[in-house]
Image (cartoon, rainbow, N blue to C red):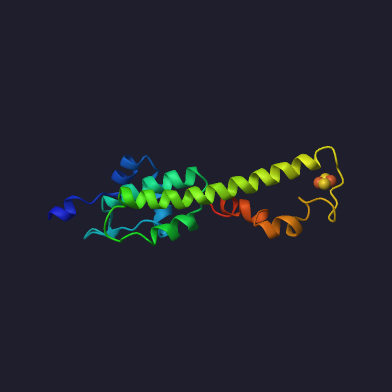
Length: 155
Ligand code: FES
């Protein structure tokens, strides 16, 4: 067996080292976030760099970053090496901006909900939460805010 093959991991080893379920690893592979190759016995083999990618996926998902956003970010990484510290600094800085924007939108929604408490009108014309297209749409908040968290499944 060559040195490169010795460094490859089975899906079970990846699960053990990453703390993820095998089904999660298959899910992330199906989503194109990680990749494997098949060995002569038609079994999946992963390079070790997949462990850092999985660590990034876990952290990003904890902070509400969608799989699509993670996919976009991974497309900026070199294909055949693990994301290094500089890569992670760059990705996390970009996601910090995304989180700041979401916090701003959530704060705005909370403040509008405060206005609804005790009102009860639920008027399409008057209530900003009933008609987010008027106010929130211009400011980039509203339904779009929660879309990434609700439109994607996770294993
Ligand atoms: S329920 Fe009246 S403003 Fe929202």
